[in-house]
Length: 59
Image (cartoon, rainbow, N blue to C red):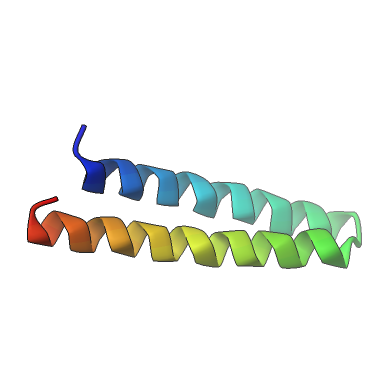
């Protein structure tokens, strides 16, 4: 598996995990968990875009 594909897959996983945390935080009224979920979702989007950029440059 290419490095760029691995980064994209990990990014998608982080997006899903962050979404679950954010929803769980809203349901349980836990604002800290919601914030962690939003941050993790953002980090996943960044990681996915890094993987796309690596794919464009051949990594």
